[in-house]
Length: 316
Image 1 (tube, rainbow, N blue to C red):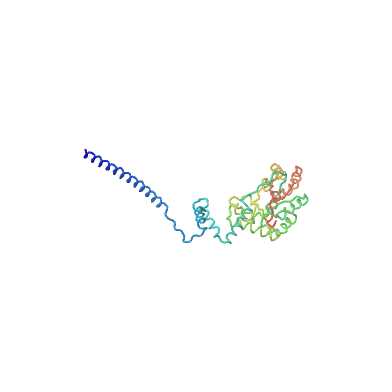
Image 2: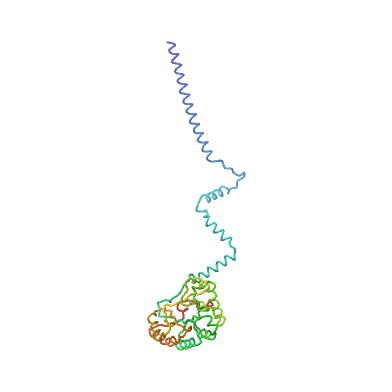
């Protein structure tokens, strides 16, 4: 009996020891897991090196810097940054030259050939090509003076040089002078430097005689394809026409010329006639009839610059 109680006691103490040991191990394991978790968290956040004597504003400056760096909206795009750096590094003379080019392009925003003016009013422009001529141009000037009608004369430089007095008379009587090249050249066949020479030579001789720097020009034959930019670059507006009188064709009668113009004319028309370059006797005979009949239909006459609303000369 005593032996039985002894065995029971040993078993009881053994059970107590096993239970206590298990509880201790479980508690240690939990604490160890917690310690491992804390250690891992500490590794993810490396310790910051603080200044020995931080100023009160240091934390806020660090925060603002961090926000600027992390916020993509505050970053400068590499291309934009490059453009800013390039602009800031451009020499002042180069920027001034670039500005002048931009102003030129605004003045003449695109190569443009003008064929007629606004169609809201019954205004038309009489234009005369290929002069001055010593025979026909003075007769045309006489008619315009009597009828009190202005004209626009697209003059050829070599003819201006040959007949300077008539050129001065055109300007003095209130008509407009415009550039028609030096040799009545076919512009599409010329090189750029040749186009420039044709325009510059004519401009120089007219300016020397009248003091006026022309801004309007008409390409001979109305042909300018491929040279629009060169003409515009030299500071001209190109004026063609929407009514061709065909007075340049041989054996045209005044009645035919008159009928051709009347069949095409409309408000805003630019009418092509000639004051030189051949026998213009039919044009001289047609002109007073043309003026009278168009005025009877309610048309008034203006110069091309007035019709399209631009200066005729650069000084204006």
